[in-house]
Amino acid sequence: MRKSTARVVIAFANNFLMINLMKEVVRQNVTGLQGIASESWTSAAVLQTPHLMPYLGGTLGIAIRRGEIPGFRDFLLQIRPDPHHNNTDGNSMVNQFWEHTFQCRFAPPPAGWVEPAGELCTGQEVIDNVETDFLDDSDLRPEYNVYKAVYALAYALDDMLQCEPERGPFSNNTCAHVQRLEPWQVRYQFTLSSAFT
Image (cartoon, rainbow, N blue to C red; front, side, top):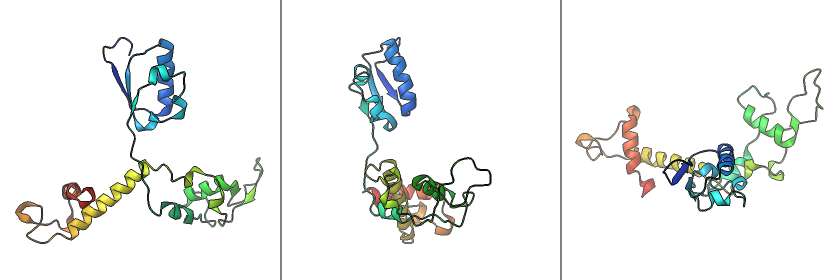
């Protein structure tokens, strides 16, 4: 970076990689470059220090748009574990999250278990009473993109279902056959979808 004639550095990296890169930048005193940051580290507090400002000051950050997802928090609050299945079944992620959050177990520990057993989970613990990132819906960025993508796809499929014969967007004004959709047809309709207007 120090020897290059390029004056702009675009770094698509996670926080861990950027911290390591910045240690080396500071060590070699590489200054005078314009940084462009990806979403993953553009607002990372660990990189927003006076020590790094001579190197990162003025960096342009590309951030994913934040948005609200109506009903998302209520949906999260209604998720419940299945106390009758252990962590090897389909409900394991919810059960593991529940055990971690409430510091309890759904099954007694095996014989000879060294750690304290702790309380047994009932599945009726009140999730709204705990501080957890799981319920933090104040900064939905990647999640908001997924939300928008699902809606855009739903609009495209709905538009395909509403297609009138002899007025379709495909060759000879045909419509797609819903039972035999081709990926290119969905992609084409996706770009025309009313979700983007």
